[in-house]
Image (tube, rainbow, N blue to C red; front, side, top):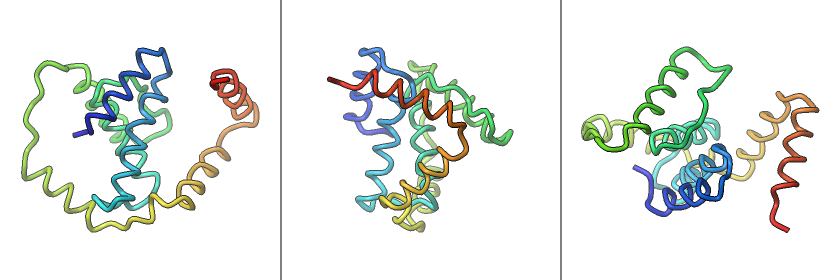
Length: 147
């Protein structure tokens, strides 16, 4: 379950009309913080980001399903999004399953949230994009930046 502050920040972003990815960024940030403070670990920066995006979808952020992901990952994203839409009736999470997930993450390392690991992840993600795509998003970021 996401922290109250994270949900509030994401809702604030939504009210301000910011993109879904910006709203989801709050959940990814929360996940990175959890790893840094020792709540649990992650195998890689990519996994930490994936957990954050999953939490965002479950909280109702309208994120699209990943384009170039495996069939299983796409199906999970659809399930998460469906759960986010059904805001009224939250089913109780299986305590056994929840505990198993937490224990598995606790066994992982904490270097996934290091500045080096996140920088490496960002650079490799950017390298997969075209120069035009990177330029476009940089211009968009510059135009939306607070003056």
